[in-house]
Structure formats: structure tokens, C-alpha cells
Length: 252
Image (cartoon, rainbow, N blue to C red; front, side, top):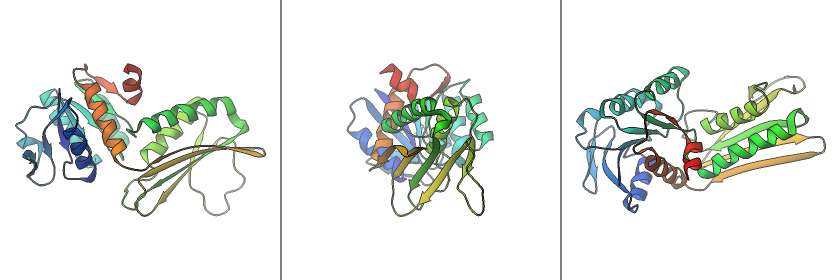
């Protein structure tokens, strides 16, 4: 049994995690943290980590990047593992996460979907095979409330392509004006925002007279909640370190 604490309990993703956890015999939701106190089906929700009395094995954080210090402080203080399921971290915050992983088990990924992590593997293999003969472009689409652009997942995919190409790619975020002919080392990343799009990512490899497109579409945010619970189960009992979905998939 894995006891979890949900950070961002009253948010849309927090409720998705809780709803799936209720039906999972291997998960117990010990409590939650949000901007206001309350409860969900008798499970206490605290206005801050200082008020948490319940013991948890793993914290699942679906709040925001601004809450990182509070989440990591609680994890280091209690020894709980932490699943960081939000995006938009600054370089300084990423360094903070790396340092925290020396003291407790930290799981961080730009996307908790199994399908996206398979997509990451496929685009890396395609990039390595196609090389400079094909131009790579990434198009990501999200709902109109998403705050960061490009998405963390788009950057994760870009990094996979870049690494497969010897880290020679130059990221170009959209194009405007007279930009000239496309350079071979460009990797275009484009963000679309509108409506209630959950998340769509398309990687296009355009060559001479042919185009290869690899894409993933999330139809519900429940796929991310399911991934978070899978990560929490993986993290219980793990030693201090920085983990991601590749570790989860390898173990299974």
C-alpha cells in the first residue's frame, strides 16, 4: 500500500488523481494540500504543508512551479518521495530539484503519459536514422488556460531529437518576418493554444518529396493522473535520486 499526499488537491488534475486513487487497491490518499482548507470524502486538505499531520510515502504535486520550494522542503523534512507532475520550472528551479534528489527520491518528467514516453523514444530513433536529410519540426497544442509555452513535453521531445543528432540543433520558437531560408540545424517548435485541447504533440520530419509524421493525442487528463499513480508506486521505498518515466518502464 502506498500512502499519497496530493498537492493541488482541489485542482482539476488533483481531483483526477484522487478519483483514480479511490479505485486503486494499492493506493491510499492520506491527505491533500491546496490554497484553502477543506476535505474530500473525509480526506483532509490543508492550506499548507505545515498543517499536514498525516504520514505519506509519496507526494504527488500537480500545483504549480511556484510551489516547488514548499513541496521539496516537505519531502526532505519527512523523507517522502515526490512526484513532480507540473511544468514551467526555471533553470534555477531545475537545479534545486537536482540538489533535492541527493536527499530524497524525486520523480520528474515533462509528461506522465505512457504514450508520450513511447513517442519520445520513437522520435529519437527517427532523428538518428534520418539525420540532416530531413528537417524536424514540433507542433504542440494545448487548452487556452495553459500558462507556459512551449510545453514541457515539446521541449522534452526537442531534447531527444537534439541528443540523437549530437546536440547540434538550434531551437527556433515560431517564425515571423523575413527569416530567410531554413538552416539545416534548425529545430522548429510551435505552440498552439485554444479551447479545451488536453494535449497534442506532433513531430514532423520533412524530407525531399516525403514527410514522416509521428504524433500523440491525449483525449483526457486521466492519462496523466494514471501515470502519476504509477510513478508513486514506483517511488515508494526508492533511495534518494532523480527518476523519470524511463525508470518506471524499465522496472516493469
